[in-house]
Length: 206
Image (cartoon, one colour):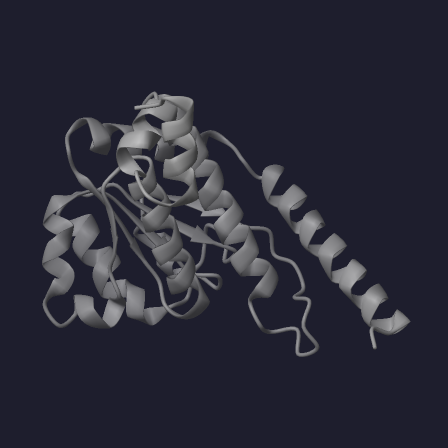
């Protein structure tokens, strides 16, 4: 049976998450436009967008790579452990490298960031760690997340932080989609299957 306490708790956590999204909206500045510019340039030059992160940040990175692929911007996810075992070579074709770390202290990301910077790939960090966190020292710029208490009993699971990462990434995808002229006809080409593809065929798109 769904109790009053659980309902109130669910309402409070949902409202807390909505406030977190409002908080990162207030942090949007010229750096967001800079990343959109860089991704558009990479797309123009047929380069790949590379995401990396560990834990929950890694899951968000995989999601964002998938979303960029869905609008026709070639993207991949590079796991830090795979990177140091030979896969870092994928950065050679990267037009943009985007690292995700809630704390900004994820040591596993250091070798990849250093390599991306060395080959002069535009390198960005999505973090709540601030401009002075360890990983921010070498990147081109930081896309900041709000530093807020978490919603689980331990106060340590990055539930709210992961949501902010995903929402900020979604905003990047939407902005880039507008820049490159993504529309239903292009979606029909890239998404021929499933209910989306069926609906687009019924509408005559593509």
